[in-house]
Length: 520
Image (cartoon, rainbow, N blue to C red):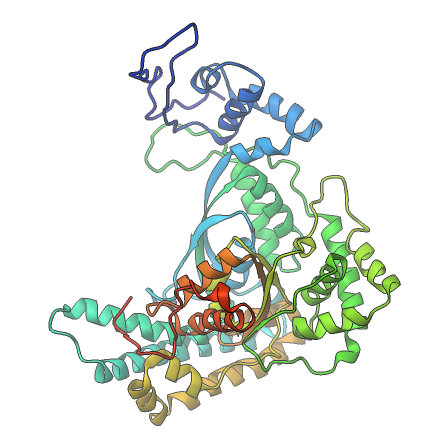
């Protein structure tokens, strides 16, 4: 296939105005666009093997040569960094929030997901997973999803009315901007009723190396929708790319770099073995401790025991806190510690990366118990290690008095609660939980799709001080969502208690301070 022409870079970029002393070529700096990602990766990789410039390399290349090069150096010699040089842009539309959480769960990832703050979700509806189609639970699933969406719509409108009554419009703020600001606050609270089945969209820019791992991970999912998305991502790399601003025929984006992306037996076997180990070892811990929204774990002096505690935490379906698991792991014999660690690597193949649970030694580890909606906001922070526990209904949701008070301010919250919106909120959530139990008889995976964003999840965030400061400063700002503001403030207060000097320079904003509902 012929290489599409470059659309903006000149064939001979302008020379540097500096004089050229000696026999060496003059300096030149230029941008390149319109080159298929694999050919671009080939051209960049040649820098380590040739004195030829990038433009010259591109002009003599075609897709066949790029494929030959990648087959040799990427697949045969294992020079995986070559795939870091090919970046691809994807749109993933009308996928469920449940699937979107898995899609974006990459440490090295850039992208955006549809915001729950600025647009209603009724328009694009919800996902009916294949697991529940044509089963006795399908009717209950449909009724429950529709009931949650109806409650979401009703709550959004009613909260907006209360906010308009409670928050006067400043003279210098136009009516449309005023309504948009208050509607965003209404969406912040009403989104709690959206189930994980809700359709959303994701745009991502990733390297082919990240993409290969992402596809393999998605293909190994227990959810059919997620497996299908992995297959569709792979197919999208091998079909002609979309080019909405060009009439020229396009080459496939990355037909070679992802052709061997398949589900990993290592991941499936590791998860199966560690789920069983966690169930056995943690059975004696009793009820999960849910007393803290944020808890700063005790620093570990033994990296091996930290890794084992993290592995058990990640696979703990009962949702115990990291502190509970740390204490148990501290009392285990060395033989049991070695056994769990070995389980995490027993099936590792030649090309399998180490699990993220093996990333130990971070000074700060925050165990966070937060609603699914705000977890998705915190999930965007990539400069830290995030270890999520399995989805569960067991962590329940926060009381409407706390949620309404934090999200609406005292006046609007009081009016909303007195108007019966708190009871309606709780009723919608509990009905969904009861319905999910019924649906689980037909499909456990489908029941997960009904989980509303109000229900809490537990995740461990390991980070250094600079990243903690960044998260705290960014996520405690008054224009942010009330729920993740409280999480970030919890991180700050825990850090301040243990390391007061490190907390001094952090510009945290107390979420219990004055609330400006018109600030966005």
